[in-house]
Image: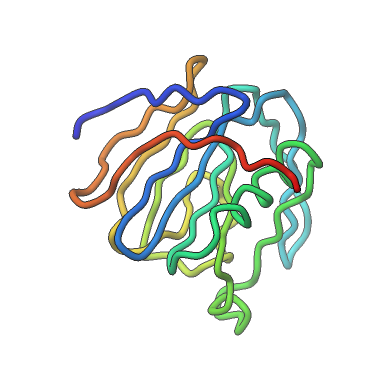
Length: 158
């Protein structure tokens, strides 16, 4: 697959699904500061409405839980927390979040320890996928064979 713009509306999300893992992503929807908390301090970056908020689930899990993380960032402005390298808790992170204009999935970084928001930890089957926010959705490129792309509705609250 070369490049494809996946049209994502306010009520839908991009879902990339492999055999054992998935990625859920949507546009930020509005302009706001996103704070990133690290061991050394805090810094903030501005997210624009077209930027991407993505959750990677390297071992699979619940898409509803991933959606909740996206909403905590884009609706409730929850800061992202970055753990120090080799932190024992990083092995237990089932979902990891990244936000920015462009996000590259990588299976070579440690979960929850990368402060640069253009990289997001993924499973090996998702490694290399590139997401770029656009006015009409998300430009997706370098999708490995065996990964399916689709658009899913945002879950309804019960």
